Image (cartoon, rainbow, N blue to C red; front, top):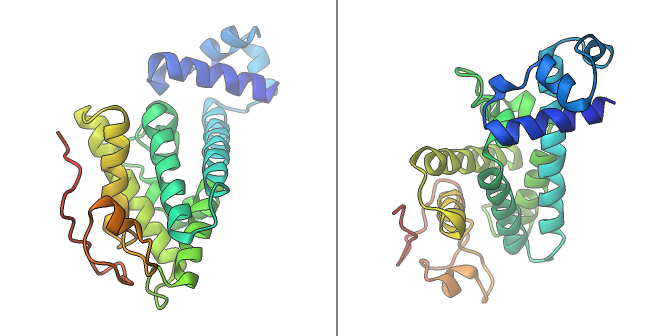
Length: 223
């Protein structure tokens, strides 16, 4: 029944795009329970919201893991995981807000190392970044957790800009966010001859650290 209540709560959130509409009464009604029955499964509304965030993280982690499994190439895996993360966030902005704290002003769990590290979605990101470090796509002297948190912050920042401005839209938004997230850590440049930098019109190939910057010949436009 906890999962049924969570499914009802997420459905309400999807419909309204506003967490304030997710109350013990509205969720109970959607799930076909009395308001008092709700408390048999969740002690408080806050407990429900926390459980919703865990479910969303599991959904996001599943999507990212599936994307990572599509390729063995370290760079392509990192790119696939990042794109999957971005696409989920743009397709489900209200759900994604449960992970980023956008429903709670002043709360920024995307920057909280303790909160982030416990997430399945973050584990997927760490694995992809670690593979790039081991293969030399990223500077091997870098720390995997530091690089992963930096990438997550850039992903979150790009997504936030797009959602607030409501542009670009569709695949253009995914492309722009992916470029912003990956180019700033230098992941667009890899050591192999078939580096995506060459194919996508970006700058010179090479092994980069997070202090370096790709210099794109043509970058996606925000408009």
